[in-house]
Image (cartoon, rainbow, N blue to C red; front, side):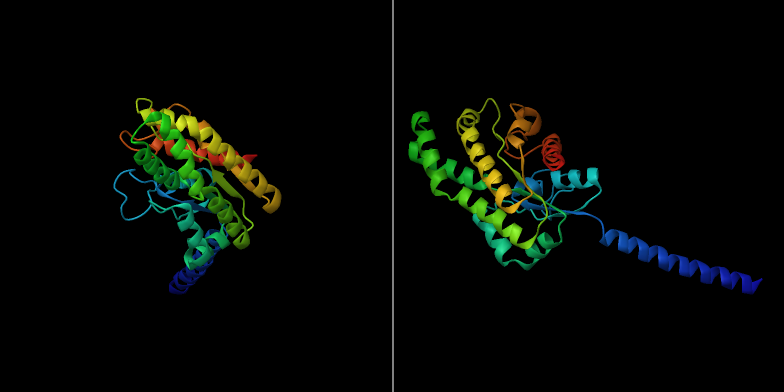
Length: 248
């Protein structure tokens, strides 16, 4: 009886070793999503997440729906020049991108907000001058040249599909800035689309995710009150836009 029991334990131990090894191999081979960008992929203000990205942020919704591992490299406050520098010099960023199956890119929002702040100061809040100064400051911000260089840098490291998000309107309908954004965002998003189209022709597998249309005029539902960041529902909508882009 003791021999039988010992044989059983040995068989169980061998079985566990193979099962654990198989699980490890399965996890290693699991598809991975790498999210690059600012406080939006980070999931800023989705509860208390000062220690790291929120598990409710849109990259994790995408990972959950597609059974992918997620590396969320979003950094609050990051601008296009900062992300480009990270991709050129940061070993962690480069290694994550190298191993990615899919990549999302959500960047440029802080460049635009900085330009808006400058324009508001220069115009003294004059609505007639605000749009003029805003486009001037956006033009001098290099947001689009940096974005183009960022996509090219990613492609040097990885041949994974890159989903580039355009800009949603972050201001509520009762905020005068909502209509300022509504005046300029269509033109800015047209530039994003042109950039993505050119990159897709030259670099392949560069896709556009339309956050602007996804949010529409539903800021009350998709943007946090007294904030510019997405709600939980907003993050789900952004995830849907990304998956829609990948499905094309």
